[in-house]
Image (tube, rainbow, N blue to C red; front, side, top):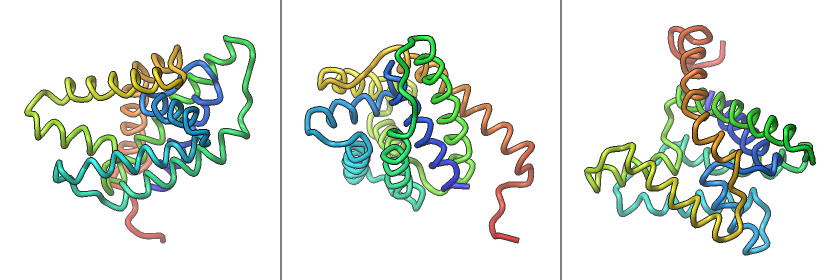
Length: 195
């Protein structure tokens, strides 16, 4: 479940990158750093995720196997999938590709969350900062997202329509995925062993 969810999450991110009309907030940052350093987007994603994980230590957050696999699998899948995807010139097709990316990312995120094997590095940073600051979770999440988009955009990352689609579409997409998988695919919980 974890590996399937993370793989789909990475594929969705790759669709957003290939669309060229904006990516998720953290990928805006990874894109900006990739351009600045001359790195690939997959490697930059790996570095950003690893640095975010280092911020867990002072916040006393504890990673799980899902946290580590999140860093490795998502970066690897972006690295492999992104070059294989079409990059359209037509803006309507670009926006459609970004929309598909948001849906796939949401489906993967829902599956990943159902596996419940540790939060992703960004989610752990959010919950750690919320505990430290005592601010509402929504305020902490919004502040983080605005900060990383702004920093990424200043560094040359692509923010645009795709970023807005992600901001407004990822919540409903994950919610729908979790509802379908927890109620219809695994109504008694995910399998614990192969049968």
